[in-house]
Image (cartoon, rainbow, N blue to C red; front, top):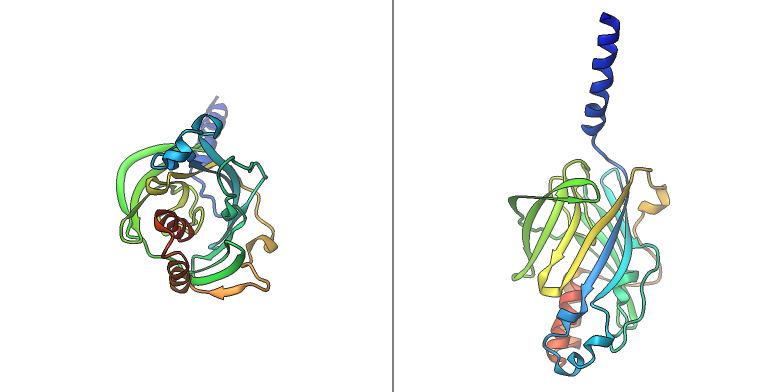
Length: 243
């Protein structure tokens, strides 16, 4: 009887032990969505075609992570062409981050050119909240940050995944970011599933090739100079390029 009781106690402890394990490597699938109907609110010409345009433009992306390194790239292709809207070339961007070294490298399409943007990881002063949300089966904590002086970013991170990375190049929270919302750009990026298989070494190398090299500030100045006469469209394009 005593032996049976010990076995039962041991079995009951196993789930608790597995739940307390922390994840250090794997692959996360994210769904990136832009609310096109909100994008159209100030465009009276497009508003008349609202019933012909889907509410969301959607694409899937994968984040590979291990040993303090992450790589964010396009996943399964679900991207479709939207009437009256130009293609979103950012779906093909590749972003590598070395969280320990504090640097990132991004293969980024800007109109007809492709840049290799290399720089320090952007510092965001996050403000923690008490709000919780379940994302892809993980309990996530809400934090709010600000970029580019006035653009608010809402992030949801889980401390069950100890790598402090996230989609795009957002990071430096006490765990993996599984959800991002940027109200100013009508953009959300939320995890749909997490796989625990370790990524292959070739999945965690920075992008390379015959690309035009630049840094974050120089890219901003280039965009500002090129699009200074484009009005609100130019300002929106610059903002989306710097996220």
